[in-house]
Length: 306
Image 1 (tube, one colour):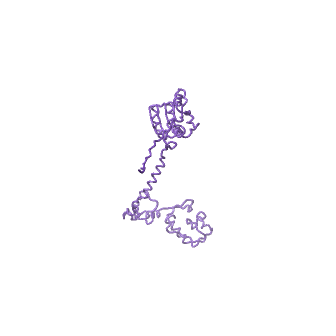
Image 2 (image 1 turned 60 degrees about the vertical axis):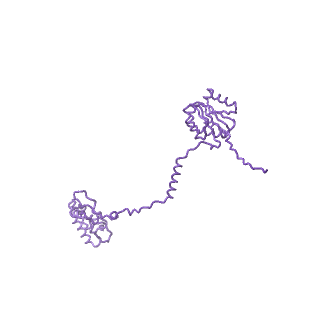
Image 3 (image 1 turned 90 degrees about the horizontal axis):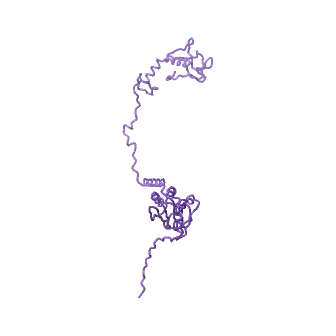
């Protein structure tokens, strides 16, 4: 009879729990004085080697635990000391997680009900697995494969940045909506060039600065009439030491005739071309602008400031 092959399925081996190895007992001056810390050490020394540490040395960084060394860590503090430790307990828990061997256990003794909830949350965030919780104690375990150190929360800024990048990526892949021609939104009335118009001039209302070119409201005619009827005071034209008022139109006509009568800019004193400041009282060029010697004097008949 020929031999028959037998297929043997491998059995699943459960995760091993470390045997009772070295233990670390952490206490404080208060629990050492009331005897609770010594009682904890006595209970542990009956079955294993116990190493002792004070809490303040670990919190202050005066000592460092050896990595993956202890099968269990036991902490004995007063309830008030647990409460004062809570704001900075994540640093202590990260040290204990590194010092524990895989599947090692952390025991918190002498608790009160007010510390249970914050301590269990801190243990979970630091990477421990909760095994048992009573009104006065907590037992947690280090996982077989543990990321050393506390669990880090995601940076909200990085998350928001990633969301924005994903949103832009989706927008770039999605076909964009057709653009709208802005000219199609305008009517013929919108496109028509407005004809510049102004309201009829009102003599009693505040007047605009000057009439515009091709004025049709009557302001140009009003300005021309006022110019004809207005009078100016000639500073240099004095009679018996008094300033003389002359008609604006008459003075303008006089200056025009004086310019026509002078084919060349010559004078007896030779200062006429320099301007009124250098001219005599009887100079025929009074009121005319300065000019170059030998230049023919011409007057713009459209001048309004003469």
